[in-house]
Amino acid sequence: MMPQRGVSGGVSVAVSEPRSPLAPEPPEHMPAVPGVRLATAAAGMKYQDRDDVLLAVFDEGTHVAGVLTGSRTASAPVEWCREVLAPGTARGLVVNAGNANAFTGMRGREAARATANAAAAAIGVPTESVLLASTGVIGEPLDPGTFTHLLDDMARAASAGGWAEAAAAIMTTDTFPKYAARQTEIGGVPITLNGIAKGSGMIAPDMATMLSFLFTDAPLSPAVLSTLLSEANATTFNAITVDGDTSTSDTVLFFATGKADVEGGLIEAPGDERLTAFRETLHDIMRDLAHQIVRDGEGATKFVTIDVTGAESGDAAKVVAMAIANSPLVKTAIAGEDANWGRVVMAVGKAGEAADRDRLAIWFGPHRVAVEGMRDPDYDEDSVSAYMKTPDIAIRADLGIGDGAFTVWTCDLTYGYISINADYRS
Figure 1 (cartoon, rainbow, N blue to C red):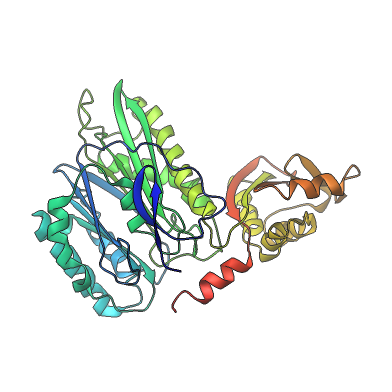
Figure 2 (spheres, rainbow, N blue to C red):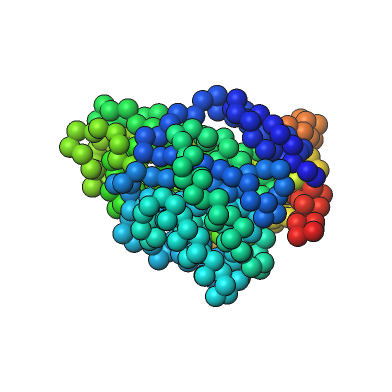
């Protein structure tokens, strides 16, 4: 379906129709992040009548940390980021949508370097200070010439605004652009934290999500950025799943320009007590973006929270929660608004973690449906069925054997998911 021109957050951006029924209201305002400038352009690699290239330009002194896909068939841009992230400095970011530059052999590596070279020349910075990300079809060679000729003009046009456009330019099968902003403080000094993300399919936690980029003016060292990002990632992007498939291109990058005038300058200790509020705010914005991705799950009609409690450990709780969240039987039952708690029992049993049938209890929202190895004696089909018709569904499974707990967010599995993915390359 041809993208149409729409409005998100008061800014005109290209969006796909139909928009997910679970889409949240966009932010009313996205503040500037001092030291960050953005530009987007249309190269037409796959999508027509919309921007599909993003360039972010960072002031000198910007630090960066990243978390990258655990896929053994990672894309060329992921490999590039692995090579250049070590120094922890950044001056540019280039993202293209429509072609993932994955499984493209030496040509892919050459395309990545050519892109970084072109961006570096346009900005006037070292090539190794440019980060890359690509998303789209796997296995198709990427011709960087389709968009590198745009980078000079983009570098000149880059400005402090354009967050909605930036989020829209990196979309593939997404139906709405994903972005968020937060304000916090460090040592009494105001701090801005903005983020954008994309993703709706091929989503399973083996680092983060499809793509997400976070930006702050806080004066944080690369080591602090890396620690804070990894901490927050574990219970946000690494706690979502749409279809159980990990992308070759999953990338989260966190940029800190250091423009905020915090007393004492650069913060180099992750345990610095002044980071308490910032740490909480980072987790909040990453959870927001992660939820937006699930709410845009391909064909999704239900946003589902899976809570597992009473497990042997937190790690065991996560394994069980993921087994429930990734079960096609559970997900299709939710799509059909069927309170089929037997499928949850099945998923708990197959997860491979310690469980006891006679200690297991299951809730759908406020309704306990199973307890002590059998259906709850107070189970009421009508009330539970009414609950299953709501757009936000919560499932809790208490294993009753320990203190381990974990929360995962997912969505239902519908005919729409099949249609989108059957037609993706055509």
